[in-house]
Image (spheres, helix red, strand yellow):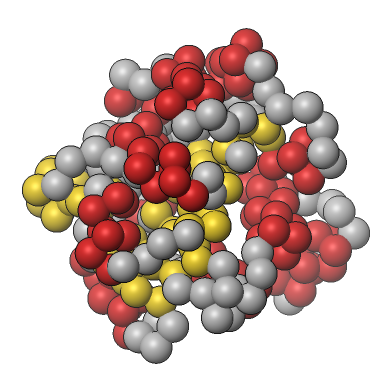
Length: 239
């Protein structure tokens, strides 16, 4: 019943939470911008919600998902065996191994570093995971012409982007990414650095999801920094 009510409210443009709003906006972007054969990347696949949307809107595309938490990766490999390439590793700006903080009772908050857990009582364990770069993995899998990348890595987004520089320059994919206080700042990453990565290294712009869909002007660096500092927005699209 809860899910039914949520779907009805979403259809009316009424959102219970900001995350629900972002989910709805993300799906609208996929619906508008993907075609049947678009190739997509999901960094931080968790339980596969975004992979389901890739399959829905680009059923003939070659999709790849990354998930470093072992039991989630195992489940994804089973559930998407015939439709998505699942990599049981994290993405960064280098290859090798790295310590990873697994939040056992709130797995969506897991990441390479501990972060602000918003007053939750968390059960943490440190595990060692394999890491790679997106450029290297796409080369290994012979995937080209990437149309869209979704990144939700609890603050490590700049590391992921740096490891995807060649792909970004060559393909100019849409990049839907989270960048918010309480996560990115634990990586000593500033919004200015993220903005400059897109604008100076990739010749791309950044917008909020809603403003992108409404064809409004992209954000200035100051706009982007203001959103980060105030928390007014924390999901964005590079384009």
